Amino acid sequence: DAVYDPRISFTRCANDPGCLGPVVHFRNAVLELITNARQFAPNINEDGRIEVSIETARDRVLLHLKNNGPPVPDKLKDKIFDYFMAGDPSRTGMGLGYVRWVCESCKGSVYLAPSLSGAHFVVDLPIHGA
Image (tube, rainbow, N blue to C red; front, side, top):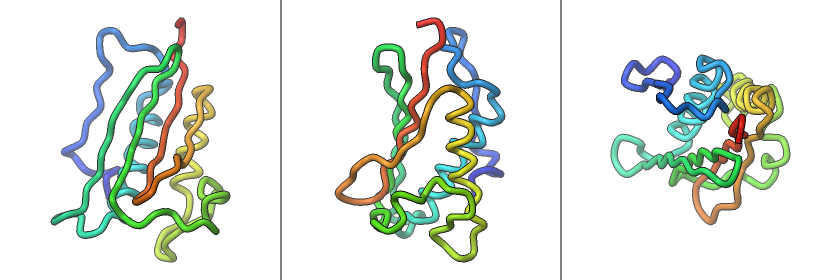
């Protein structure tokens, strides 16, 4: 579970754009996305892959998180950010709902981007003062 992985840390930079809100919530939201990506990536210790990238677009910061696992089933796409919606019966289904709450509380959003393979999540946050 990435949320408890001591190898992952978050540090605000000196020129922090101010879009992250409370760092602990943003950190947990990103780690939840990583946890999901790891869970659904094939053989994460062998050929499974997770890509994280960040870009700025005008007054926005976009964080992209992709894996090379199976795509999200069509029947789950409209509900994936609902609380108690779990793609795996062993999970509670709280994680992606929490991610959405964090993003919305920072005046942003999170969405599932179109992808031919794997899952591609995008966190879209405003840069305050831009």
